[in-house]
Image 1 (cartoon, one colour):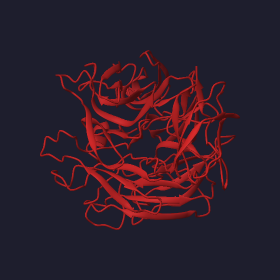
Image 2 (cartoon, rainbow, N blue to C red):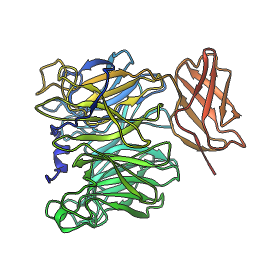
Image 3 (cartoon, rainbow, N blue to C red):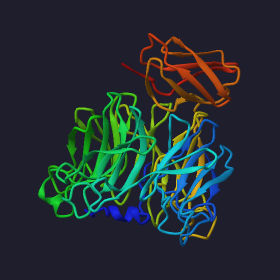
Image 4 (cartoon, helix red, strand yellow):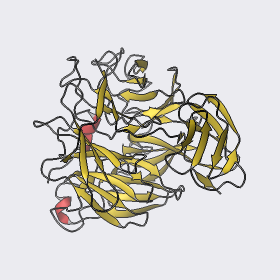
Length: 478
C-alpha cells in the first residue's frame, strides 16, 4: 500500500496511473483545444461549468501572460465548438501575487451571475467578461486558523459559498488538518469546522445533500486500525456536516485489514445520485463506492492492479455514472461509463493517446445539449510543456438536450436561473406541474421564480421546438 502525498497535488505533480475497464464501441470524441502555455497550461482537477451564455468556463493551474516562470494560471472561456478565450491571467502584479496564483478545481457559477473559484491562497470572483476581484486571502494569522490551501470546487447554499482547505485549523497535524468554511459573496469568512486527524485530515471538497447537510471526504485521518497508521494518520473518512457546523463521521476507510478491500484515500468530492446515494472514488486500491446519508457503505467496483480511477464522478441524463482513469506507460487514461443498478458493469468509452489528451483527473461534464465536455491535465499537440500542456475535449454519446439549474433548490418566491438552449419564444415554465413566472434572458438562459404551492420535482420548459425537462428535481425549501 503506497501513501498518497497530498502536497504533490499542490505542486502540480500529476500521478501517472490509469484504470482499465471492459471495452465498448468507440464514441464520437473530439479534441477541441491543446493548451500552449501562453493561453494556459495544466487544467488540474478542473470540471468545466456552463454559463448563462451557453459557453463553458474553467481554470488552468499554470500558463498565461504574467509574472511567474511558466505562468501563474488562467481563467478561460471555451465555446461548444472549441473557441478558447483567456479571461484572466493570475499574478497580474509582481509576486507575491495579491490576486493569487495556481488556481485548481474549476469554478462555481454563482446565483449572482458571476463565477467563483480558488487559487492556492485566495478566493476570487470573476465576471464572464474577465473582471476579477479577490474576496478573501487565507492564512492572515500565524498558524492559519482560518485554513490554508483551499481545495475542491466551491458550492453555494443558504446564501453562502462553502469550501474546504487542505491544511490549517487545529495543530494536531504538522500544518493543521484542514477546515470547512463558509463565506459570503462579499468576503466575510467563518470557519465551520477544523479537523483534528482522528475525525479526518485533508478534506477533498463538499456537496450539498438533498437533506440540506454538507457531505464530503477526507483523504487521510480517521479512527482506523494500525496498518493504515503506519502509512498515514488514517486512511480517510466520509463525513456529514450540518449547516451549523456539527460533524458526523459516516465511515472510516480500511477499518479491518491491511488489504483495505474498501479502498483508502478517497480522492474527490462526492456525487449524490438520483437514488439518494452518494458515490465516490478512492485513490488507494482504486475503487468506486456508494454510501447512504446514514453511513451504509458498499464497494461498487474495484479496478484493481496498477489501475487508477480518478474523481469525482458525474451522473448523466441516462442514469449512468461517467468518470476517468489515469495510467502511465500503457496508455494515457480513459473515459468510462458504469451503471448504478445491479452488478456494476464498466465500459470504456475512450482511450486517450497523448496527442488528444493525457491523465484526466476529473470526470466529464454534461452540458445541457446532452454532450460531454472535459479536461485533461496533460497531453495535446503543443510541446511547450512536458507531456503536453493539457487539453479540452468533447464527447457525444447520443443523449438528448435537457435543462439544468444554477442552483438546485430554493424557497417559494426566490428567483433562480435555468440553463439550456432554444429558449427564445418559450411559452411556459413549470415546477412539478405548477406554472412559474419567468423571463427569457437569452436563448440559453431563463430566470424563473419558485411559485406558491410548488413542490419538489422536475422543471419543464416549453419552447417552440419542444419541451425540455430538467436532469434532476428542483428541491423546494420550506
